[in-house]
Length: 290
Image 1: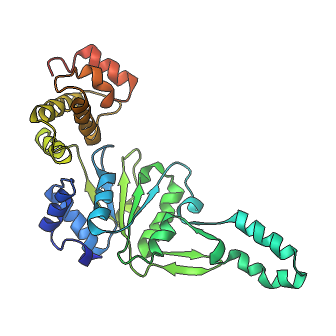
Image 2: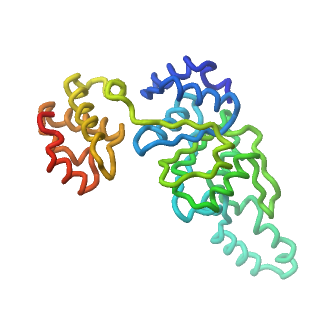
Image 3: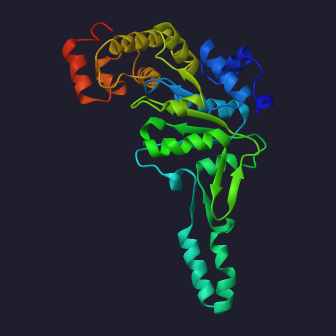
């Protein structure tokens, strides 16, 4: 995979910037190592700091297909790896029943052939036939339970899976894997050992302004500075849900659609999504004069 992407840390950072993603030196370095060493990359950080977006941009700049596995409580192997098309199998059984019993016995094993296999994201990622190996995004792994995390240990170690009816399938060319976590729970050390790790923090006010300028090149400087200053104030408060970079960009877009001098409190719902947070900010007058 390395030959499909920039061959140095600086070139990778430049390519990411050209795709409107600003990565600092640390993030660009660990991403470069993930590509070269073919090691999964685990990104942790608060929601909205750009973890998922990095995987999307990585697929764009490499020309690879993005395969996304969204994790949630209760996710199991059938949703992540593979399943059998039971409706098609049932139709096939009815077709066999219309024939002779001998024919049915001879072809019953075909019920669990490739024809009836439904590939889920993980199997799709290792059994791909793409010219460029895909980018596999395992999003919000912290939402999955311990059992699924344990299953991922084996998957990420060998990039191989065993389907009892078909045998073991091993990736000919490994996908580039990005895992994200909002740290709603602590991940096991065994999973972290299989990955390179990077924590993405909220950007500084100056860097966030640079991000907004990159994503919204037509935004007046007054809007950029005003919104970034307001978000910096909000992040100093004890909120249930602190606004991420995505909310900052959307807030700037909202002012572009309205008026650069629009009342920020009137548009506060763009940045804050919890009723108690809205009430707290308004009661304390956090945005007065902003």
